[in-house]
Image 1 (tube, helix red, strand yellow):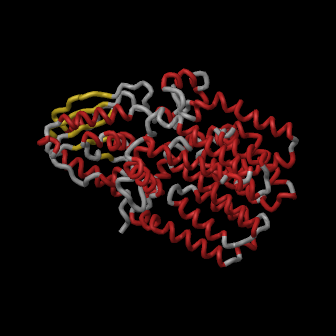
Image 2 (cartoon, rainbow, N blue to C red):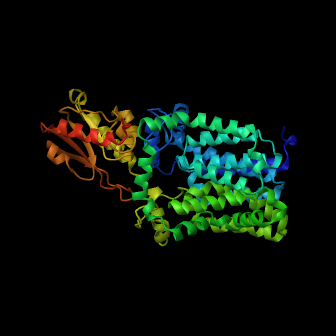
Length: 509
């Protein structure tokens, strides 16, 4: 059966399975990431849009949990498979560019040994889908340019449409790619009915989400405004540029050689649009103060270009150097790329490099990388809330509710509290605000927060039930209170608060 398979495809398959194995052997070492709990909750309320993300991630979460149950494996296997198929696409691009086995080996290993892509494919987040769709549409654009068959526009725009429904940043790739094609000698490809029809297909695919955005006063704009205040403000030009080299440092020589060769050499000028599109994307993101990892989707394509360039223009000795260089450089970075070390060992391992590896979005340095601190403590919280809810008398449960301060807390209670019969928590953060009831009566409450806050003045009896004690948890010390006997003005206070918060998402008259 395998005799008919070429050596090139056998090699691609071996490397793809190697990539998948890396994630399967490490997926259970940590809990789900904070964001994954949100997407798990979104899957329970399928819609055409959400406060901070398009609907695609919720559909995938619903499918994964429907097949594999509400488990960590269900949500971790999907990004791992995206990594598997990404290797195949990298190999296909190499073959499109007339590369051989050595080019495949160099390009595919550059992807597999990339710290950034190892991290991305270990997390159930839209970024994994985003990177995959950038790579897929890049492959289709290369096919379009090589064959000059304009029917590929239909596939390209279809992929872009679906990609938009998983992460809006596909717009950067779309705009930069079209501009690069236009200014690199491929204008004639635009003068085709297939281009217009493809654009129409993309619009039809994304239109339900756009209508949902319109109906809810464009939550995407509000979300981007919040990111600009809380996260983008900490983005510096120097840091952004430096990250472009550090994110894929084992494959640094691979992608830079590919970028330079395909940008300046006449023999491959047909594909000059790829490095041009990459540079345009970097320029736009710098101007917009975007996060450095938003460019990651391009690097898998550049790896393919680099593999081809090195095979054609470098002697075998240099090719061997790159193959040895990549795993050697990755080795000390591997614990930051895959969740392979336990919390205590990871804290010790990252101590000496904390200034660089453990700096979070707020600009401060902590004892763990931010993603790892976001992948622990949730089980303790979910079990604390679940057992406390279960212990309440049935007569109290009928009217009681749970309140969480952020989507991580609320999502964790949804995920771990299911077996205890916990209801979905009330929460005013992200999409949970949309699901929060408009009114609340004189009801007892399980309240999750670092301290009592306003609840101290809204309930006459507030009792501390317990707290999460995990020094590696991003929200260590999180407390659970049982609150009874609300003041008479509590329903009014709650109703006014919810009305004010939801008004942001109300369509203007």
